[in-house]
Amino acid sequence: MSKIRLAAVAAPFDRDLAGDFARIERIIGQARADGIGLLAFPEACLGGYLADLDGDAEGPPPLRLDSPEILRLSALAGEMVVVAGYCEDAGDKLYNSAVCVNGDGVLGNHRKVHQPLSEDASYGAGSSFAAFDTPVGRVGMMICYDKAFPESARMLALDGAEIGVCISAWPGSRTNSAADLAQDRWKRRFDLLDRARALENQIIWVSANHSGTFGSLRFVASAKVVDPGGDVVADTGVAEGLAVAEFDVAQALDTARRSMGHLRDRRPEVYPDFGNGERELAVTTY
Image 1 (cartoon, rainbow, N blue to C red):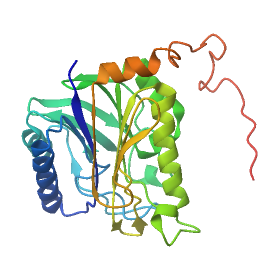
Image 2: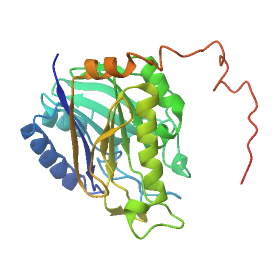
Image 3: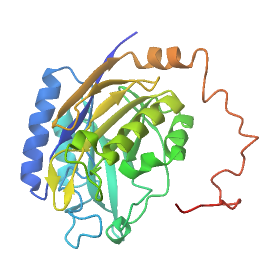
């Protein structure tokens, strides 16, 4: 049985792409010295997130998947598996995307599916969730609001994901914000969703997030690693830093699923149409 060290980043990123890469290079160097095998940076770390959730005319710099910047990220990663967020230029549309790389190149790419508030004014929506193999195990990626929907992580787990990596630009509450960010209600939701997605799918969960402020947004940081039982084993709190944990991935999943296997014990015949839009949902507004 072999163990792997996993790390989630909480750090600030902005429109200064050269500065972003300097920070990424420094963090990768620190992670390499710490023996990290998988390192997750936040959503939109290459050029910063939107400056305002109600819309941002400027937006981050568009980058193609085969751009020099992604090639540079791959070279910096080397033997490490690195996940990072960027604005993907797909030709006809821009997407809020996550790329997974190592020194061999691109291992996986995910386009954010669920778009909060006015994000759809800046980005197209992704249309799929798919896990992929990496040297540290089978990985599934999500971006920020994706994790608010249980189906996202469930689809990845059913596709064999052993490690869920969710990268975010998750801010504090815009209304009734707490003076102490650690008590913020949006931070509480961020943490609850991280733990729930890990537990319900019995997978290892790596959650990266922005820290500090950008535009009108104040980010909750709270990068963390959660075990398949839903317990937080490493957490940065509301500060910049690295959350680091070590697992034998196969053993951790086997132990969590040995008695009560949430994927094994599903009853799909009871809910065949769930999520397909074939049933009306009664929604009450409070």
